[in-house]
Length: 144
Image (cartoon, rainbow, N blue to C red; front, side):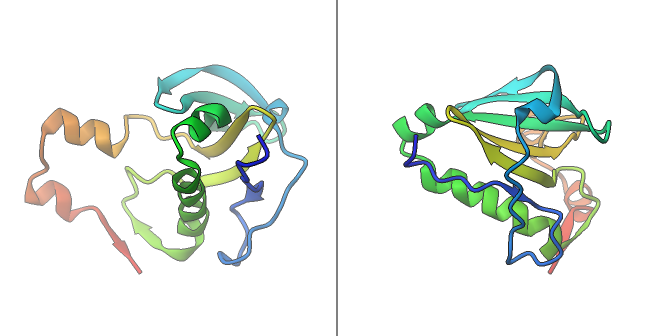
């Protein structure tokens, strides 16, 4: 799947414009627990980093599905935005923002290693409540 260029990176880099490449990270660095959810491109797993004993969410996306849906650009944008978001913005009350720590790929899949945020994502809560009132929305803001 050479047409799906997805660079490995470590989002903990101090300079958000320059991504630190870590070619040594792979799925083998994580202990897989169970599937948290499924989406159009693959699954999200609850995992534990073997070395640091920290839990993460591993987003596993099929390269074949991404290419079939012609979504390479949007997936690369997602990775780029998540890697820059961690260092570029001060997030106040980040209940729905999950930081990305790592991104890597193998022959079949692309992977994003993100904070494990229990309780559902923003889309789930919007769907559940249909709309947020002014009090609920006033506590979520991002300062630039």
